[in-house]
Amino acid sequence: MKHKNSHLLVGYWSRLRANGNVPDQTDIDPRAIKRMLSQVFILDATIPTRPIYRLAGTGLCERFGFELKGTSFLAHWEGGSATSLGSLLKQAMTLQQPVCLSSIGATADCGMVELETILAPISFNGEEPTRFLGITQILSDVTHLGGRPIAFQRLIASQLVRESEPLSNVNPPPPPPVIPPSQQIVRNHPRAPHLRLVVSQDRPGARRFNADNVLERMFATFGGGAPAA
Image (cartoon, rainbow, N blue to C red; front, side, top):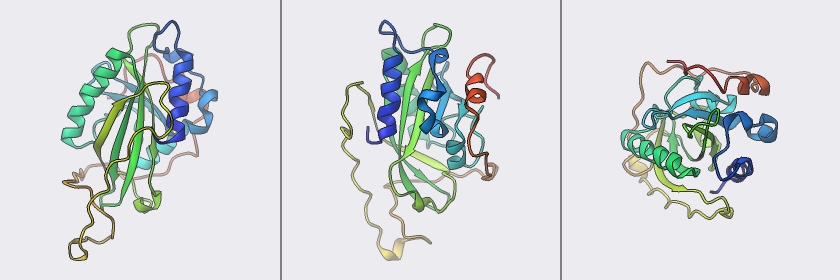
């Protein structure tokens, strides 16, 4: 893990563990993670290959350009990454350990950033873990996005997280190759190897959201009812 907030979320998750079991969703106090709440989300992974956002912070929704609640977590990942993520989520729930994902996020015009996502398994009403408490953080220069939403993600590394892992224990991925000037397109951003952007023409346009969700309202929606279609 590289980002401080990743460590803070895993540390909070670890403190909530009772008798070695994963925390229950009802034990999560939004006040304890208030400073990073806009980047926090909850996934319903009852079917690990079809995880759905039960809720997502306003900052995260702005990064992707639309309201994430009720949508597929895998919708903006390329095909190979989505397949790997389904297996990773299942493994994390079985072992009851958080997983750290490193990825490249790209806009429709190839503005790129490095992202780090933490997915920590949680239960609901004392049952077996079927959900994840997560956070996504940008590690590189956010100005590369040019204010545009992330349209695409590609997984570049993953690992299960040991709760005692020190900061920056994960080796950074190798830098992308330098593209000759004659092959650069529009903007002078390096491109990840074999990166293929798939952008739906029906994708909702970016829009502004409120500055932040009211904490009680966000976490009141955690439980009960199936996620929106």
